[in-house]
Length: 455
Image (cartoon, rainbow, N blue to C red; front, top):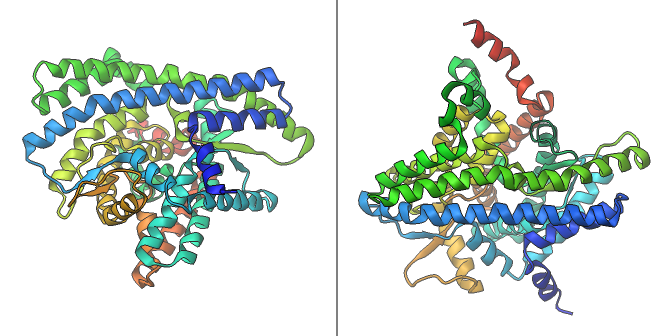
């Protein structure tokens, strides 16, 4: 039996089917009635499909503006940005990719049995991100054993991120029994020191969430209005003329659509999380478990989408001025890493999220530049995507570029990279314990807010 073909056939149904089916199965295991488990699965699929449609519409709308903006600013960069869809396609076409399901499942089971995690990762679709890390490390170092070890390290990080984000997701998003294990949120690690320094600058300690802005600026804080304004300004910068109004209306509409789409996640996961919690209290006393899912469960956050849309022209500017950069953000112009990592780290402090995005966007672009050869080689060898002669492909908003770069270089026995990797992992551990001490944003900034208000 060709197991690779079997796995590819299962993956062919896509995450919008695969993950809801897993939720239905887990719901039945936890004792849900079939009707309720089935409904939870369908609502979850609806949420993923609705969110994907909105994201695709947003990407479709801004891509012409980004290209026009690049044309009028004279940007001409050699590597074609194929975004996460292109990265996923070439990774799944790699013959060894399906083996990393085994890595994910085995590591997760060991950590659950040893009580080193409370997260059961159901986000099987995104195993491709683990496989991609292994291929990147192998492509640079030529060491497959080290590549597999790096994939194990990534799985451990993802499960521990699931642990540390779960309380915030339950309280701030109303989602019981679930968390996000997506490696995108690893961006919070490198953002952590700067976010901590912001604690000493009073302006960053004020409330900068959507609700607070609504009190201060009224209608201008509405997602549909903010999206429309940003869209019109982006269109004007790209010399789109009256079409800027169309872009503004489209972005405004998409911004308004995200929160209702995210409600389907609540409808799906609230009964599931309640049932799982009751099951664990009855059968596994003294232990708490959460289910790891993809990042769109956070899609109800206005701050998330405002940050990522504002970052679009900023990422183009960075691409134009960064020395040595080869990638113009097109397909990956919406940087989910900056949005998701910043959201969870700051608790939705919009000002902090935008400033952190501005500071750390170059890291994504340089990561995409460094790995362009690796992406191109994988694309050509698998023939999963077309690479024009003399061109390169890459991913402008690559996930965890710092972690993957240091892992790859460490595999070549680069001692600076080894020291850097140890330091980065130590920083993640520090962030983990910080988040365990202050799991809720309200508590995280309580003393800081009181000091700022007195001033």
